[in-house]
Every structure is written in C-alpha cells, then in structure tokens.
Length: 137
Image (cartoon, rainbow, N blue to C red; front, side, top):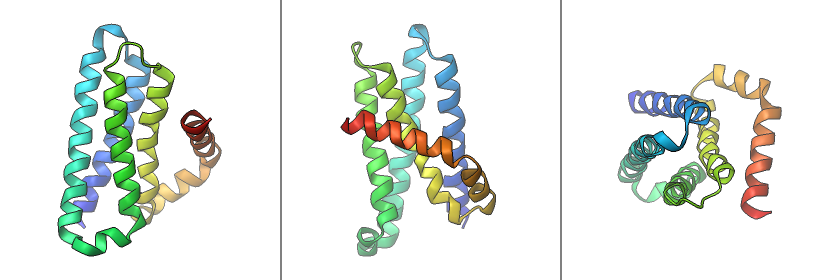
C-alpha cells in the first residue's frame, strides 16, 4: 500500500514536471530537462524491477506490468532521441506524454482520479490519437 502511494506520488509529480517542461523548455535549459527526465526514468525502472522481484513469475501474466515496461522503454527511446539536435520537438513531447498514460493504472487506487479521467476523456483520447498517429502514421 505504501509503495503504491509512493509510486502514485512520483507519477503525479512527473505529470507536473512534464507540464512545466512543455511551458519552460528552451535551448538554454535542455540539459536540465534531460537530467530530470533521466531521474524519473531511473525511478520508474527501479519500481519495475522491484515489482518484478516481488511478483517473480506472476509478473509476466499481468498486462499492467507489460504496459509499464513499454512506457519505460518508450521513455528511454525518448531520452536518446531528445539528446539529438535534429530531433523533432513535437515527437519528443508526444512520447513524453505517453508516460501520462500511467495515470490510468492509478485509477484503481484513486476514485478521484477516475472522476478526473472521465471528465477529461476527450483530452485523453486526443492525446492517445495523436500519439498513435505520430508513432504509426
């Protein structure tokens, strides 16, 4: 329970940081945002490995775990792309927004989050559509 609360707090903190990065990022502070993104990815990787260690073989049967692993892998790909000067800024932002999808996993933990997601379902669908279009279009 405490572990889930801590992870939820980190995900929500990451949402705030991504929002700030979207508004405040520029050429002069790119390295700062890359370091911050790296820290969050490291925390997510540690969380993933901790859950894997705790669940052992049952980890592989939970689609939520595969979802988290995919989001983390996408985050590392984004990090590599982000360090390239010729990278598309809009594509990087879309990939970072994929991390926000982790909020869906928190819905079982927080009834208030369910209400917020339902209220903003159109925005969530738009983001998901743009993400799919950017990745596969």
